[in-house]
Image (cartoon, rainbow, N blue to C red; front, side):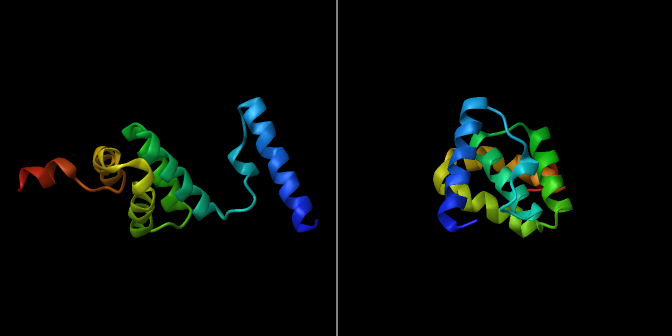
Length: 109
């Protein structure tokens, strides 16, 4: 498939997603599992997902081979788009998902 045909195929696929409002994560063939999992964590940061969602998404990212540093790096990478208040709100959720005892950290200050 030529580059222009590939781009056309991708644009058509995006159009179908917006029309159908559904897609399968397994359909994303252009990213490896680790990168895809980190992108999904980044999207969750931008939408201030619930704590349980972060636990599942971060767990999936770690299972796909991401490191703690990459999860935090993903959060920092989306910070300019998400905004400082969102990052502050999400940071404890990410920390909990990484196994960090947030309550204990505040008690020892």
